[in-house]
Length: 260
Image (tube, rainbow, N blue to C red):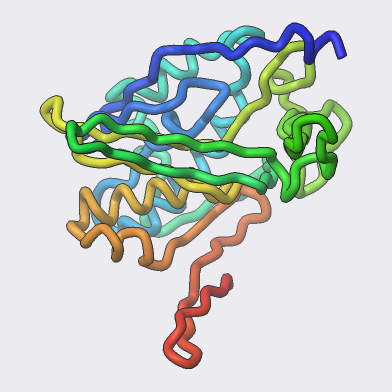
């Protein structure tokens, strides 16, 4: 209860990343999304889909070094990932005819919603909210009517190394007042100091790959906004070493999405 009594909302400056000529502004750690998008440069070039999947694998591995900056020093990792040389280093580790074995696992999270707002004056809001799992902790406060979250599930555990949970990662171990590592990726995109896009999403570990691919579809491949969002995507969570892709099936004129 002491943690709840002492909880305060922290207002922090946005983190910016330069990606393929665009400036992305988003959440700093313990969110990993903005840093993850900085690796889009590593997917640049021919065989873009293969390079994107390999870049995602590198991103999820590096993500394990992040955590609440009030408790762990994430400055070095963040500075490295945002530097122009970092994507080039990752590119050198990606071979167009090779994939590599893996040794990390990641946590799933759910119960997330996102919305984007732009007004007539081009003021923009990109906001992600979450209770983690569906219906959070499964507890409804009788006094407020609020569904309580179970964000403790986003922490890493020293003894839990199952495929569905974070491997032991000291930077994200549980501590009083600490905030867990997050996959949330609310971003605002500008070019030449002008607003050009507002993005975000839900879906746990799928958020970062999804937002990355919508960004690529619209800003790099030149798709229309709706097509950029509806286009099938690929996902890789590092462990298991399996690529998932969206397969669209039409039933009575309705698109039904499935995973393979």
